Length: 110
Length: 114
Image 1: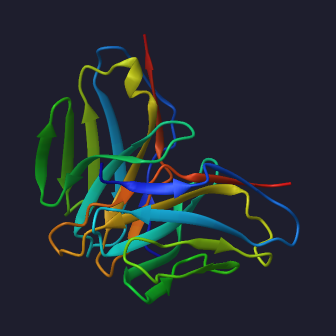
Image 2: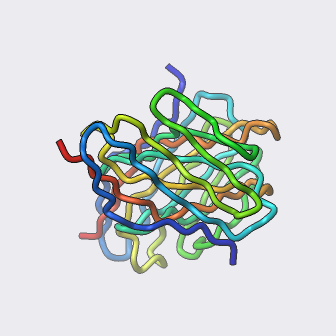
């Protein structure tokens, strides 16, 4: 059974701090990795995608991928109260199927 | 505006009733998906379709049915055989290009049992 694991949280960080969210996956054949943000009662919104080892930066967000360790992370710099949400890690292994983690709830304290 | 439209936003089902959730996209995406989300849980795949007139069962297809008669539309029917249908249902789509596997979601339908 292919799995994606995330700590459910909540992860609490003060406003302006760096929030670090982590995800591990079991399928070594995984090709593409995604981070979604989901506010309560809303649908997931794609915020980052990463396909190769290393870091990818987009504004205040940085995604990090280490395929050898089967580990993906998301860093949010200068965290704002509006970043408070659940962050879902998703892994694509081909054959049109995606595996989602259960999400990490982030709380940014003003 | 291009996007994925799900309707209705809220839906109530009576015992023994079939209900249909609508999903329409104007992104010209080939692949479409239906997921179910229960509180505190990840997304579970119900059905997916790669092209018109073709669809595949996901991990929790029992009690559900779909059709894909048009590229733009992928309706989901929750049948009376689904004994625990209360959940948040999400439709998603993506391009067929191998190099672009980004998955985009509609706004969701919350289904509850009366």
